Image (cartoon, rainbow, N blue to C red):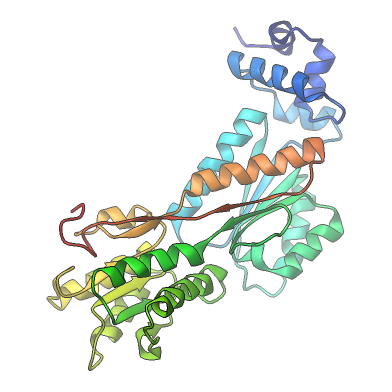
Length: 336
């Protein structure tokens, strides 16, 4: 039999009205009562009717996910993380892919928020890093949490410390004895690109190695960019002995280009990527990378958004630092 709100009230030892107030995210509910009701909801696997709640309440019970990212693995991980929180708290997820380069993108997203009747929005790069986007949402009174590259003190923000993780990867390559390390860039509209480049430069500077401009190749976050970038580096009179690519897709392209030229990996050329996406485990050899827990990042963003809406909590920020994963593309004897 389908679990009802009456069953939840009985299980939690509270009134039906109290259960309704908790589920509808009304203010003034004590934390202990909220926790007791949500525990009963979880134990009974109670699924509120979102459509009925939207019709009966002045509150909204859907959150939006806005992204402009060509990496399907990133988008899927984000969706899975956001959905897990939405489902546990009785919300729907509305997904909005877009192109951040469109001239009217800020207006377009604000109109979408109005049409969709959202409780709030989770913004991912590069839109989360645009001040005009943030200002427009604040002016409309829209709740949001943004995921950004960096390490700072912005309210309602989940930070990714790309700079430190990139420094860790570059330091690993330096420890393998490499002095000339190429850098394959992602798209410049993403702050992660500049932060990862800064981390690369930090590690070189820590070993008193002067950065060489010919070793840094502009590109975008794609396999094809990795192929082109690696070909350019390998064509230099003094090519690098290692390459740090801004993500795993670029790194996979670089490895492909190197193998086409009969370059042995990692004996003649070490390669590292970033994010620990499936690309890093689908190459041969597997790629050294930095594990970025995208599902966990998305879960935290959704939990922060809903917690702030429910309790009007003090804005907070959290920082995740992707962790180095050493595999055979950079180190003999590592995981093949």
